[in-house]
Structures are given as structure tokens and as C-alpha cells.
Image (tube, rainbow, N blue to C red):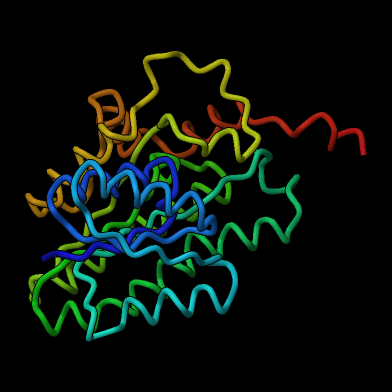
Amino acid sequence: MTTVLITGASAGLGAAFARGFAAKGCELVLVARDKERLEAVARELGREFGTASEVLPADLLDADGCTAVAERLADRQRPVDILVNNAGFGLPAPFPYSPVEDEERLLDLLVKVPLRLTHAVLPGLRERRRGAVVNVSSVAGLLPTGTYGAAKAWVTAFSESLRVDMEPYGVRVLAVVPGFTRTEFQARAGMDVSSLREAVWLEPEAVVAKALRDLALRRPVSITGRRYQAYALAVRHLPRGFVAARLARKRRPPQSREAT
């Protein structure tokens, strides 16, 4: 029986990953801050798929919470076969206009936490010569899109490098690079996405289905939808200065902060 630990599993892509792995008969370890929401997800998956889910409430930005999850991943008596690093959040304003404490929290959750949790799970995966690490990145990481994009660029590069290092041990590593996806992410970040066209939106189930196919095929990166696949191909070849100038025209400081 494959056991999958998913961070940020109470909603959005995390809950969709839980559902996707449950449909494959996996046992789950569900991690998020909200115990009640995690338990609701676990009950729903149990009813629909007969899935056994362990609920592990933890704030990954809290030292004790992150340590508890790392220790669960390192537990050789209850091995975890697949780690999904999904937890994250965004900020509504560009870097110069966000409190530095918020920027540091963002980097901790998007960079330091996946690094630590991956480091905790890898010894067991190498020893058993199987398993996988799935890191949720973003198309924002392909472009100069502030701290969030920089962190996601790190996630993708980290995943691709780790994949090379783990290949001799039979351990798979996948970077999932979604575009705009219908989750709570934008609302929680306070982002105004009202001007975005319907065509740019992805459903979390579609992102997860593509990711699980790509994981099975041992691909390094998973990008859902032809629009975003073409976008990723284009930005690799466009001059970085041109791309940065285009993005700069779209990014404006929040009015409330300009006035202060």
C-alpha cells in the first residue's frame, strides 16, 4: 500500500491531490493548519474511496509544527512513499510594498519548508529505492514576477536538480507548474483577478490528473493545458528584458500604500 503525505491538503490543489491519490487506492497523511477541514476531507475520501487517512494538523511556519511533519516523514516504521509539497500562499502587492515580515514568511513556506520536508523523506526513499517527491511550483516561476515567482523558480530548479540526484535510486521527482487555478489561493492573497478571461483558468482536478500521469511517465515537469505549455515554451525563448518590461507595465503599487 502506497502512503502519500500532502501538505496544504485541506483545500484547493492539496485536496485535489488527496482525491487523486485516494482514487488510486493510496493511504494518505493529510497536513494543514485547520484540523476540522482536514477531518472533513478525510471523512469524504473514506466514504467515497474507502481511503484510510491520517490527519496531521500542523502550521508549517511554526518550528514545532514543521518538526512534527518532518519526523512523520522520517518514521521508518510508518514509511511515507510519496511527498507532495503543496502548501503555500501569495501576497497582493509587489515586493517593495509588502511588509518584510510577510515576505520572509512567504519564502519560508515556499522554499525552506519544502527543502526541509524533502530532506526528511529522502533517506527512506533511497533506502527502499522507490517513491516520489512532487513539488507544486507555478508558471509564475518562469517569469520575473516578484518574490512569489522567484520562490517558485527555485522550486522548479530544485526539483529538476533533485530528480537527477535521485534517479539512480529509482526515486521520482516532479515539478508541477500550474497556471491560474480555481482555488482559494487568489482570495486568500487578496488578489484582484476579475479582469482575467475565463479561458485562462484551470480546474484543480485537471492539474492533478495531468500531474499523476506525468509522475507515472517519470517526466520532470508537469504543465496543464496547451495555453500554458505554449506560454512556457515562449518565455524560454523571448528576451528576458522584453518580458520584464511587459510585466512591469502590468504591476502597479497598491493605491493605499502609495498614499502613505
